[in-house]
Image (cartoon, rainbow over all chains, first blue to last red; front, side, top):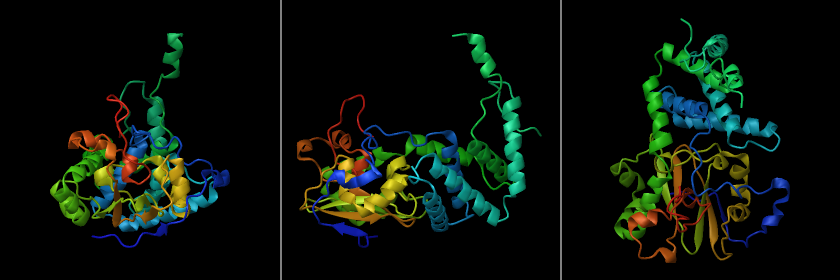
Length: 137
Length: 213
């Protein structure tokens, strides 16, 4: 497939970087030659993998996913001062988008989800350090 | 450091963050309903943490630099060649290669969310997903590139490509003249992730130990 037209084409002279106003440097330290970790914390990887797995299993199409996720990102960025930083906030919105989809499909019951969150918390608090954490039957 | 204090502080398992507990709750429901295979979820994580990353894209770029026939295939039949090499898209997306030239520099963004050529670059860095990049790459690409340390001469135009769920873009950077004569394996070390997004230019590996991404 060949590309369509680019969204913009700039031929004008470069602007001075100092013209950025208060937006600040985007990436003075954001272009590492050595890559950052693909995921900062395990739950970022887990929610990403869940979304990919559920889509591949046919529970939703990726275009539908991108559309919903994009809308939620836009809504969140409009109310967060300074905008989203693409880190924890991004994955939290990914998680809520996934939960929202699962609720719509009557797969996830919000009350059960909340109850299980509390059960997992309790399991961590009551499991001695070093032992595997499991939900009580 | 008093060791018993350490033991006291971690008498129970470390409590994950709120969203981490929420993910666990969600996984529990999905597993109980038989909708997910935990082993398959783990395999996806392992794939993106350890097996797929910018080195795949760097290898393609380096090969394109030394093999004109491969380059023609990569640019003109991207999906076909990537599929042949085992780098096909998981979501049925198409990957389009956009080639930098002395007249045109290409820059990739996803204004909607973070669509990205996963099969050849892995998961995107945080800055690619940030509001700042997603909005400013379109509005003021030259300024954004300056902040990445990339100065595009006035006579070179900049094309900004907006990735979607269906089409993901990969930039084929120009080979630096200083690298002429190197073999494919050495050239791959000149190609780091940002080159293939358009926010960087190929450069010599810093050290044998660190290399590029």
